[in-house]
Image (cartoon, rainbow, N blue to C red; front, side, top):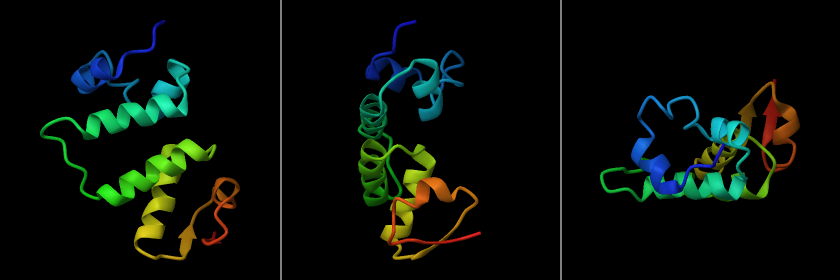
Length: 108
């Protein structure tokens, strides 16, 4: 199966064909796409006219973390949000991924 081009994913992200695979996890697992590719897709989506990130600095930092660490994008977002809001404590059961960020205090 071919990996969709960013323009295909952006134009069809809400269509039924890509509903399941439009998530970063779906793209990564189903299409076996790289993190760099997925981050590029998400950035292309955010550059689409009419699409606005509510927290652009958080999203930008999330993309940096996602590209450079082997963690799920939702975890990268939580780290970016904690950094942006200067929240040093993160409640999680998934301590393995967050141990890479010693500036965060993890609580169960």
